[in-house]
Image (cartoon, rainbow, N blue to C red):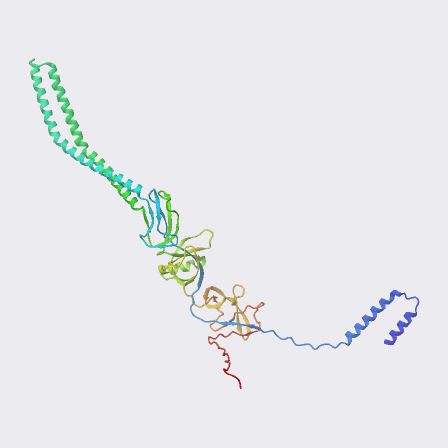
Length: 447
């Protein structure tokens, strides 16, 4: 073959009809032939049998028994007894005796107001009471005088009537003048008017007395109000609590209804947390059965306990649940701050026939994998709630295909399917710590 190629090139070079541009074509043909020869002569590598891949996983063993679902909530610290202390009188602020954030006791002085105006108003009301009391005494004396004078008025009227009768007899005998007779008639009429006026005064006495007594009652009520206003110049705490903020300063003029400070009661501290809608019926039913609910609250000073007191009667606009209100012990209330948000864990009534599995064992939304003969078996489960232990999250699942003692994988495999071969390698934990011994250097000189 090589000899033929040599002859071909010799004849090709001698030929005058081949042009110089045919040389590259010849080189390409020779190269292609050499490559074909090398490929045919190349030995084939041995074919390895493909082995099935084994995936390393960790597992969790299922344990039977009733388990309580837990809700992770976020509670806002608040107090239903949050009071805004307002001024009752028109006065100047003399001094502030409590500062923002200070713990105060019931009856403790908070703010001192100038009581000059209130004291003068009280004196004016007392004077009105004294005046009306004197008028009532005068009215009673007048009534007694009218009763005594009424008898005299009747006697005078009778005398005037008899005198007129005598004048009429003498007038018929022409022993007296017509002017004298007219004078006696006038005297009788005047005495009758006087008697009528006296009788009217006696009749109107109960009405006048009732009017004076009503005015006296009003004045006494105003006096009591003035005494209260005077006492309110000393502003005290209505309950044990903490001052949220002060709204006035010494020397400032305040008017009735103007806010002085805000405070909240430390005896009634609550945590408001939103309860998911699907758990509302469970919680309400347990409350009706008087089943106590306690939540563990995480604070900066450690964990605290709060008791579920009641549930809001309506769903707030824009939310997907109902507010649950938890009571906090008064000893723990002083460690909390109004408006703060705290993590809470609420335990619900226990459920039978469920298993607690790590959240990492859930594939998709409702699938876990059990190990049978070193291979995966997919199991569809129903989620029944969650649990939180030692900073880890667990899911409560239920399925008729699961049994106590089953091993499920907790490792998230990228392409997990039933039948996949796996190898279990769980990390063993031990409480025993191996101490390292450090060799001691010998003292003294070496020989």
